[in-house]
Length: 435
Ligand code: GP9
Image (cartoon, rainbow, N blue to C red; front, side, top):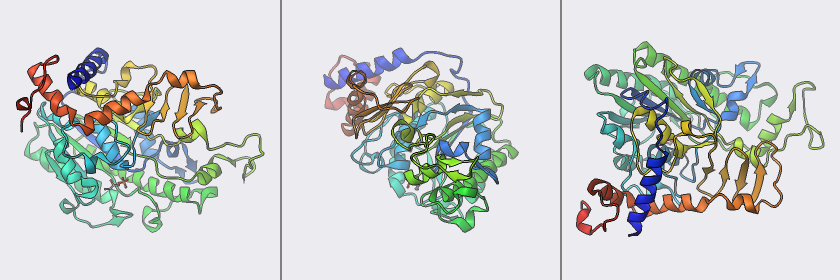
C-alpha cells in the first residue's frame, strides 16, 4: 500500500509539473556530450589577473549557451560520484554514505536507460582506474553500454591525480570519432569526467604559466593556475571535436561537480583586495567582505551550461537550481521523461527551493543553514531574526526522506512493476518482481 501511495504521489506530481514549453524536444536525437568538470567553481569564472581571465573559454561557452549561473551540485560525502548519481537519476545523494559504493545494487531510472530507449549508445570516459568510486559496478546500475577507464587510454602525460585533461580529451576525441565512423547513425551519449583540476592543485610545474598577481603564493592561486590549465584543455576538446565535425548535431552539457575546498582565509584575501590601494582590507574597514552565511554558500556554486555550436539556446537562467533539476531540464529538451524524478524542469520555474542532503536549503530570497539553524537573506546576507515561520514553510525532510526511501528500499524496482502493469492501486506481490 505504502509503495503504491508513494508511486502515485510521485508520478502524479511529475506528470502535473510536466509542461510543454519552447524547449521541448529541441535537442531530440542529437549526440549528447556531458563534461563532468572536476572542481569547477563559478566564482573563479569572475576572476581576472594581469595574465587575463582564469577561465576564458568556459566564460565563452557560458556566453554562447544556456548558462544556469545559480547552480548547486547538491553533493554529499560522495563528492564526484554523488554529482554523477544525481545528474543521471534526479535523486538526492544519501547523506550517511555514498550511493555509488553502498547502493550500487539498487534499480534506478537513469539518463542512460531513457536514452537507450531512444536508440542511443551510452558511455562514460575517465582517465582514472575503473573501480574508483566503484564506477565499474555502479555503471551497470545506471546501464551505461561502455566505460572507457584508465586501461583504455595511453597514460602518456600525467598531471595531478593522473592522466592529463589535454591527453584525456585528445584520446577521447579519437575514440568518439572512431565510433562515429563505424556507425554514423547511432546517436551517442558520452560522459567525459576530467581529473587534472583536483585538490590540492599543487602540480604547478605542469599547469603552465598563469600569473595571479597579488594572490600569488596562496592555495587559491594554485587553484586558479590549475583551473586555467583545465580551461585550455576544455578549449582543446571543443575545438578538436568541432574540427572533426562531431559538434554539428550535438549538445554539450557541462557541470562543475563540486567545490574545491578553498579556505575562508583565502576567500577573505580574494574578496578584500582593494584595487585602488593595492592593499587587503582589514575587518574594521567599512567595505570589508565577510565570508559567511549566504555568501559562503553561494561561493560553493558551480557552473551548469547547455551549449550547442549553433547557439540554439542562448540565455542566462538565475533561478536557484540543484543537480536534481538537471535531468528534468535536459530531458525535456531531449524528448525523454523520468517519471520518478525529484527535480523540476528549470525552464518552467521563476523560483525554486534547492534542498541539500544535509538539510540546508536555498531559494531566491533565503539561505537556511541546517547546522546552525540560521536563516540569511540572499541579497543582504543578514541574519533573519525570528525565522521560524519562514523555515516551517519549507518541508526539507519530505524530499530528503523520499529520496533516501527510494534508494534504501529499492522502490524503483516496485515502481517499474506498477508502471508496467498499470497497478497504481494494486498490491505488488513478490511474483510481480523479476527475480
Ligand atoms: C576520481 C575523480 C575525482 O576518479 O572523479 O573524484 P573526487 O575526489 O573529486 O570525488
